[in-house]
Image 1 (cartoon, rainbow, N blue to C red):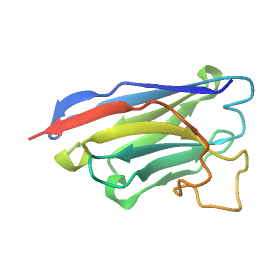
Image 2 (image 1 turned 135 degrees about the horizontal axis):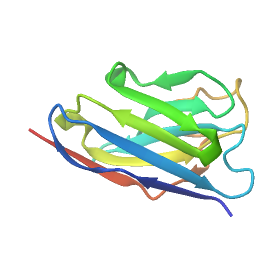
Image 3 (image 1 turned 90 degrees about the vertical axis):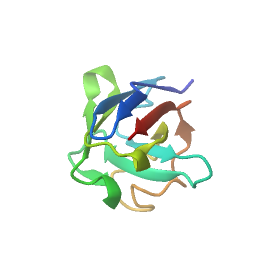
Image 4 (image 1 turned 30 degrees about the vertical axis):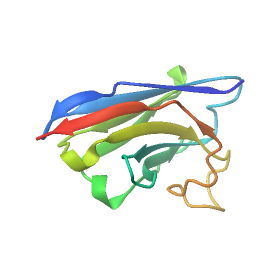
Length: 129
């Protein structure tokens, strides 16, 4: 049974910071897998924010968050984090954790949603001016 549980969302003002966490439950769910954060604002398409491979060092970001957000992992805790700094109102969205293929390279790029087949329930991030 696979379960991804996000936490850490909340309401902040422009320029503030939040750190999201995603814990992966289930045998073999987390190991050697692509993990990513996505977000979806009301009326908008879901977009990838950041991604990594749990057994590698590379990280991937959508252009709009580069330099502000950092994705990281703690393999002992089977947890992926998203540190979000310098938040602005355009970052307001529901943020979802997702697990993708158990492949480091090849196939879809890390920031495409199609190969991610396990999703959490989401955590809301609201940024006000």
